[in-house]
Image (cartoon, rainbow, N blue to C red; front, side, top):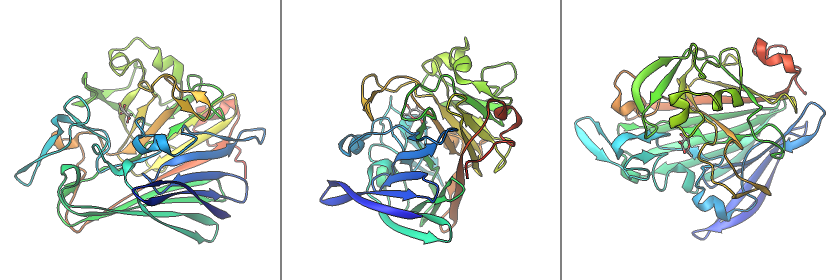
Length: 364
Ligand code: FUC
């Protein structure tokens, strides 16, 4: 395994480095010290063609603002905080309002728009990059100085592991995720409408018009949100359901996970045979089908459009600071925040999604 480093740009007189981690079987993950952005993942299809399976830009410049949050780590808090304020320990904190009077994805200069320290490592058959960032007390309105570490590790079993770790010197909200848009067709040959998605989840969160949870958990049974047996994305996206409609005709919803580190999320493209299995210790996953992707932006030579990628954002339930019955993501001073999400890339036959991917034939 090896890591190739390339200077890719410069920002605030600091170099932006692209790290390409390559395993012994040709799988590659490229990431930046800016926003911990994953710019490329190269994985084989069932015929052994190695192609890119994520959305991204060809050059660094559009990543500076990165409006769609391609590939980035999101923090301090993923998703929306209603009214851009919250109360903690008797104090009201006001955050940047960067969407409709609400706070989205950590604010104007969230973790996706800062330069991280980076160190590469190789331990046995695992190679990766350890990113570190210190978020100062008061950054984007949040309390406490938070030391954050995000580690991307690739192994020879075609698994990418993202491990998040943080410590704060004061109580503060922290709910991290990664915002990679997957498209398993390879080099964005097709959109994700014919991908299949399977999620072990009995309940999802109802959203209001501003895409913020109302606080209601809804049963997935008999709705387009029932992904327990696997569903073709198109069927759900084109469904006549008020929750699909309000998200811009698609998914942008948090699912409560029934299982952890047990094949709980499987994305499958029957045509290429590529299968992605996501396992996590997080409470939930926000499935976002790119409903708001702008038209016509250049994505590796392909014009962006709705449904060109799907994000599987493992995280705590959004806006939990306003819903005491949601699991809390307040990080207490001195305590360690720790979460792990693993992405397994394999290939499979068409039948495989129905049995949870257990019969899949891995490529290595
Ligand atoms: C996702 C969604 C949002 C948003 C964005 C780019 O996480 O929840 O609706 O548009 O990312």
